[in-house]
Image (cartoon, rainbow, N blue to C red; front, side, top):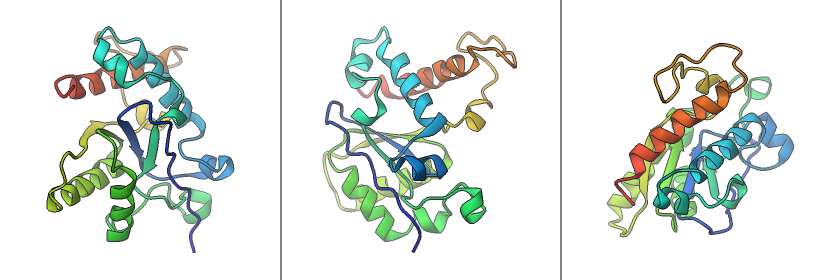
Length: 193
């Protein structure tokens, strides 16, 4: 049986939940979700959101510690290349009914689910459909247009929020890219709050 890492329940300080693709090698070593660089980037993103000029955005993100929030993955099965030649779950894995029921239960008391990356986006849409089928109200709002927070994904962002090119080797590059992600998130959520 494949190794799994369960979700982080959080401290109920916010109605926001985060969804990523799946646990990897760093998560296997740490024994919890979103470890390593992706975890550090989530903390940095939270810090940026806490500094927002919008009071409602700041209220949604009251802590820069990722483990204060509910965090889950589109699949709870560990994947990384040395283990199984991939770092992502297959569509059949995250769209499996038992997996979708797991996500449905984990996200039951959240108001906003923020999905990072393609697999989380697809799984979110499937869980959202499950909420609609069951006619559950209120149900979470799923925000699915954000890139994954891995460095590989973030490095695809080439311009900062002012449209300036982010230079290779810039020591502030990751922060600038996460500021772009924070703006994307803020633009998606500000009309919902």
